Image (tube, rainbow over all chains, first blue to last red):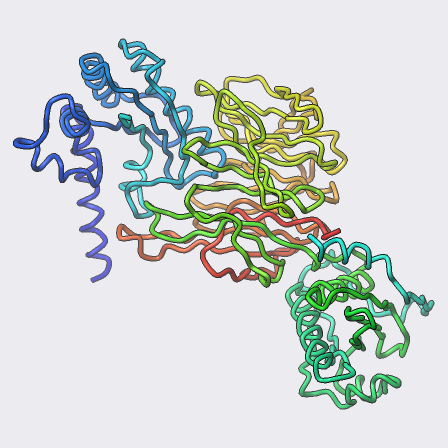
Amino acid sequence: MKLRFLSIFAAAALLAACESAPSDTGAKGGAGQTAPAASAVKTIAPGSKEDFVANVGDRVFFDFDKSVLRADAKATLAKQAAWLKKYGNYAMTIEGHADERGTREYNLALGEKRANAVKEFLAANGVAASRVKVVSYGKERPVALGSNEAAWSQNRRGVTVLN
Amino acid sequence: MSRIRSLAALAATVLLGVLVSLPAGAEVRIDITRGQMKPLPIAIPDFAGAGPQDGRVGADIARVVSADLERSGLFKPVDPKAFIQTVASLQVQPRFPDWKAINAEALVVGKVEATGDGRIKVEFRLWDVFAESYMTGWTLAAAPADWRRLAHKVADAIYKRVTGEDGYFDTQIVYIAESGPKNDRKKRLAIMDQDGEGHRFLTDGSELVLTPRFSPSAREITYLSYYRGVPRVYIFNLDTGRREALGTFPGMTFAPRFSPDGNKVVFSMAEDGNTEIYEMNLLTRQKARLTNSPAIETAPSYAPDGSQIVFESDRGGGQQLYIMGATGANPTRISFGDGRYATPVWSPRGDLIAFTKQKGGQFFIGVMRPDGSGERLLAEGFLVEGPTWAPNGRVLSFFREAPSDERGRGQSVRLFTIDLTGVNERVLLTPLDGSDPAWSPLIP
C-alpha cells in the first residue's frame, strides 16, 4: 500500500522532470511555480518577472556531478538571453544548486561552477556580465523533497533570478 | 568571560597530587587501542557534601562523571543501588572488600565543600579496588556555576590515569542546529558541552550558516554565513558575541579552518567557476593562494604541527585526498581506494586523517594514515558526513542524515560520536536536528 503510494509520487515527479526537458516548457521546470503559469493568459504582462518565469523558464538542470550545460539547458538559456536583451533593465542573480548526494563543501563549489556555466552562456549570447551575479547554495536549497533521482534531478539546477 | 578567566586561574590551584607507585601487573589499566574490550567496572558514589546544597552538587557531579565515562565505552559504572559502603564512611577510608564484593574494579571518592570566598572546592581520589591502592586525585576550586566543568575535569583525570591517554570531556561542540522542511530549512549556529548540556544558540536563523570550526583557543569559531545573501567566511568571538568577515574577496569564501597556532585561516574561494585554497594570515591580513588547478580544491585541514595541509580535489577526475606543504608545495594524492573521498580532517595526534567516503550509493566515515595506508571505515549510512576529532584523537563526531520521501517524511539529521575502534557509536542528543559538528580542544 505504502509502496504503491510512493511509486505514484515517483511517477508524478518523473513526469514533471520530463516536462521540463524540452526547451519550450521551461516554465514547468520551475517546480512549485506552476500556479502563475496556469493563470498566465490573462494576468502576465510581457517583460515582467512572471513573464520570464512562466514563458521563458527561469531554470536549467544538470547531470549528476556535472556543470556542463546539456542541450536542453542551452535551449532554455538561449531563450533567456533573447528575453534579457529585450528587457535590458533587469539585473539578475544566478543561483547554482546541487542535489543531496555529495558532501557540503564540494557541493558549494559545484553549485558555483554551475552558476558560472549559466552566466558564461548568457554572456556569450549578449547578456552583459555586469548585469549578472552568481551565488551557490550547494545542497542547502532543494526545491523537490524526496531522496530519489526524480527529486535530485530537479534540485541539480541553475536558476536565473531577476532582481 | 569571567567564568573562563576564573577557571583558568584556578586550574593552577591543584592542591593535591600524590603519586603512589604500584606493582605493574596489578594495576587497573585500559588498552584503548583494542576493539571489543570489556568496559572497566567503576563505582562512582555521590561526592560528599557538608550541607544539603553541597550534597546536591556532589550528587550532580557524580552523575556527570559517571555519564562521561560510560559514554566513552571504556567504563561501566556500577549501579549505585548495589553499593554497600555509605558515602559518609567512605570519607574516612574505603572498605575495599565492600567494593570487591560488587565487582567494582575502580572506585571514585569525592567531596564538595564551599570555600570562604564563595567558590566551591571539589576533591576526588581514584582507587584501584583490587590492588587496594591510590591511583590519582586532586582538589580544584571554581565558581559554583562551573560545577559541570569540575565534573568533566574529574572524568578527564580518571580517563587519563586509566587509559594513559588525555581525556576529552571538558570540551564543547559547536554545530548547526536545523529545523523546518528541507526546501525551507532554517539553520542556526549552536554550541554545547560535549555531553549536550549547556546548549545555546549563537545565531537566530535569519541567515544560512554552515561548517563552524573552533580556533585552538576555543574562544573563536570560523564558519560560513550567507549574511545579506553573500556566502562568506566569518569569525565569531564567543567572549564578545561579535562576528566579523574574514576579509573582502571577489568570490564566495567557504570551508574555513584555523591553523594550529591560531594565526591563520585556510579556506576555499570560488571565483568564475573555479575553487582554490587560500590562507589568510590574521596578524598581517595578507592572503596567499595555495593551489592552482582548474579543478575543485576544498576542505583544507592542517596537520597538528602546521607544516602540511590535507585537502580534497577532483583534479584526477573524482574527489580524492591530497597532502601539500603549508605553502602549497608538492601536492600529492594519498587516497586510492574505490569511491570518492572528501572532508579530510587531520587528527590532533597527527597519526590519522578522518574523511567522508562515497561508494556504491552509500556514505562512510573512515580514517587512514597520512600516507594513505591503513584505511578503515567506522560508520556507514545513506548519508554520513563531516567527521571532527575529539582533542585526544580517539573519538570522532559526525552527522547522519536519513532519506526522506516526496513529502519530506523520514527527514532527520542527527549528531553521533564513535570511537576509533568503530564499536562505540552513540547519538549526541540535541534539541533540534544537528549537522556539521566541530569538537573543541580541551577548554583552557
